[in-house]
Image (tube, rainbow over all chains, first blue to last red; front, side, top):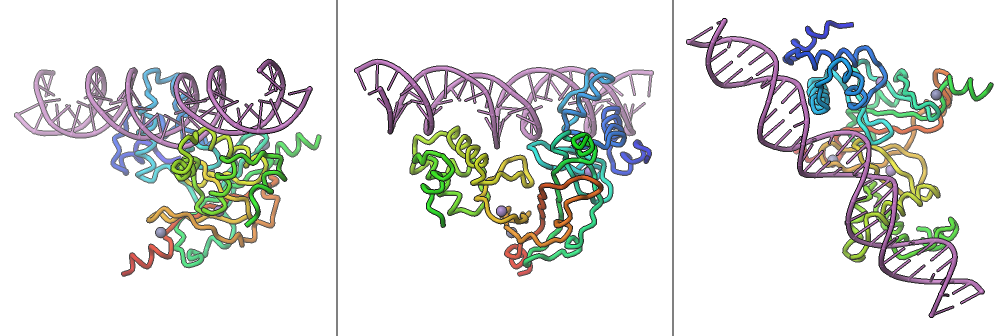
Length: 137
Length: 137
DNA sequence: AACTTGTTTGTAACGATTTCAAATTTGGAG
DNA sequence: CTCCAAATTTGAAATCGTTACAAACAAGTT
Ligand SMILES: [Mn+2]
Ligand SMILES: [Mn+2]
Ligand SMILES: [Zn+2]
Ligand SMILES: [Zn+2]
């Protein structure tokens, strides 16, 4: 768990209270939250927090590469702390989004049909192991 | 190119003018258009066409499995005629979306980490071959 | 013709996001 | 420390894609 204030300074972002809290939230909640989810979670301890600040801050973090923005399945952007490339699996029962290892081999091939592939987004859907157990019972 | 009126009747959808035109458009334009793009393209020859009709019609077609709805990279739903499963590549220069063959082998594996995988969405991003040529010149 | 049903339409509402300008906070220079 | 310019935050309004809704329309049945 990297020191948040240091991380912000390294990226030439002033470590304001709201920026620290937002990044801290992403570090502690690996749930791919939307901007609004983050806003709601922080609203209690920061009653004057503005939704705009959350959006602005997330945008800044993504521009600096601290976070990544994902368009997974629905029409809303989700954010996560920028880690190793990985793929996503969404359970259609419980809605939970899981991180999976990126271990498929066409991925190493960066030229397909003559197009230069720079980014891969692999999104899977199905029933997660927890829901499988419940259904089997 | 399947007869559109027959196709609609097979699916118990009355082949109204607007439904035929919308499906015809999707059959002739393999560009993964949004609802609004379809609306705009048809607005000339059907001046009274309503955006709502386009949305309703697309929804019906997706429900019947005639079309598939895709959330590719941005926050807008794109539609395409339902064909073989394939993956998508978006050029970040020209914005064009290409269809690519689905030929990666983890795809055959329907159980990952204990989760049952039912649907795969693979979206690639990069520079398409046309734009590569232009840039190289 | 009067009813029934399905279809289309336009407007209003919606949720996620952006724009904008005003208010606040901050970090230096003096 | 005080003052000020720059950065940051805020809330309201605007925008964008989409959906809800109810009225208007079309077509078929009695
Ligand atoms: Mn993830
Ligand atoms: Mn396609
Ligand atoms: Zn589940
Ligand atoms: Zn291109």
